[in-house]
Image (cartoon, rainbow, N blue to C red):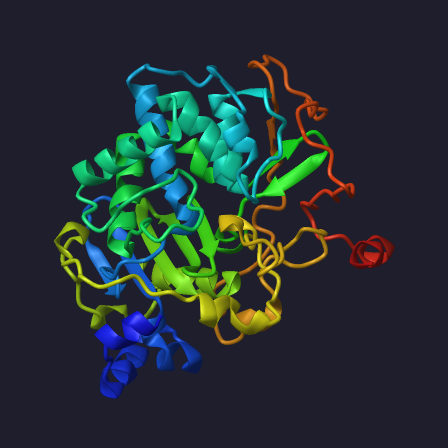
Amino acid sequence: MRCLQKFLVVPAGALALAAAAGLGLTALDVTRAWADALLLVDVDTGTAISERNSTYPWYPASVTKLMTTYVTLKALRDRRIDLESLLTVSPNAVAQQPSKMGFKVGTRLTVDNALKMLLVHSANDMAVVLAEGVSGSIEKFTAAMNAEAQRLGMTQTNYVNPNGLPADEQVTSARDLAILARALILEFPQYDYYWHIASIRLGKRIYRNTNKLIDAFAGTDGMKTGFICASGFNLVATATRSGKRLIAVVLGAKSSASRAVKAAQLFERGFGTDPLSWLVPSQGTVDSLQPIDAPPPDMHEDVCGNNRRRLATEDGEEGGEAGTAPAEGANGDLPILPPWSLRGVGLLTSGLAAGIPPVEVYTGPVRTHITSNAETEGVLTPKRKPLAIAVKRPVGKRLRRLRE
């Protein structure tokens, strides 16, 4: 964060103009405008509709899994694997820090199920399972990730692992992430289904998508969240209205609710519902945005410093920093976006995905008939029995029991 302050000075007049132009920022957002990176891109044309700090290097956290998915989908397209191919959970996968599925060494599952667990629950162990299954080792898979990044023109990106666990050399930018998201959409339309999954069910346990916009902003259809203390709260999201599809990238938000609000504000501007959106000039195409040579900001002190008490967030365990930000909805009793976070915004709701049944996932070979009692024999037994995440908010006595 201090790095961005050093390299970027935003005049007060410019901030006032930006606020007047319909950026929808709160007073806190305006005074700390240098502390995040924002980008809005049209999928069809590649036009950068709006941007702020979009070419500053940033730690990606779990949005790294978008490239893990890209390399896996390319292997599917090249017929080196198929969705029914069985992958094996290795000791390397088991050793990954949360969030993860927690399967035992030797557990087998299909590429299809691994992808669903990766993208919905942001499972770090599934990233390793896919990497080893596609390329034979994490090192070879990471090399493939970097090769694809270079080919796509992601000039500010470097990967050292497939899941986004903290690493000083693992960097990207909002610009590069938008390029990657656009490539996923345009190159692999047959796999678009994976971005839309609101929740998955493994046995009796339900995992909601960490991208809460799916439940809170009409038209949202992807893609991936990320959090480590150094990066803040990251989000790459897509939404479609009236045939127009947009990509919003938010890096360095201070909470999961904040990044959702910022992404929704970007979408509103791009879909033309912001009456002053015409005041914000186009930035050209996303590829033409000029990279900035600077070290990535380290937001650890601002986001997780001084053991400050953090509000509940859904992906606090991403990046292996469990405990710095407890998991939202882990006990099923909290709304996806707390009401206080939406004051003055009016863009988000809750419960859009409540009526969508979870997609069944399981271990073992492909099944022709899936039941709600999916196989869970490969799951490690936790010290305390976890509570299933409720699809709908519980009420009455059940709510009180969960809070206890």
